Length: 112
Image (tube, rainbow, N blue to C red; front, side):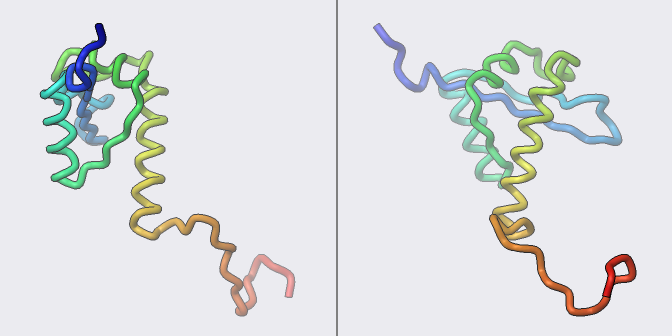
């Protein structure tokens, strides 16, 4: 018999402050209703939510308040890159496929 969907949900919240943290820190983790609440709070606060079943399964095994171990740096870095790209696109900072703007003024490094 399969579990109800609410019990299958997993969520982890990370924080990272370059000046204070050596690595991202797990600040919340949970399953089912707790996972739904973590996601709801993040979305209401404007915190980007990244969905990756494999990553969340690994991160849910970590203790709250602890930094992620070096073995997960690459996983979390890939998540942060995706979140940054998505955020930039949403803010209009990175057009999807816009060609580079032509500059009519001469550039010192370009031939005239």
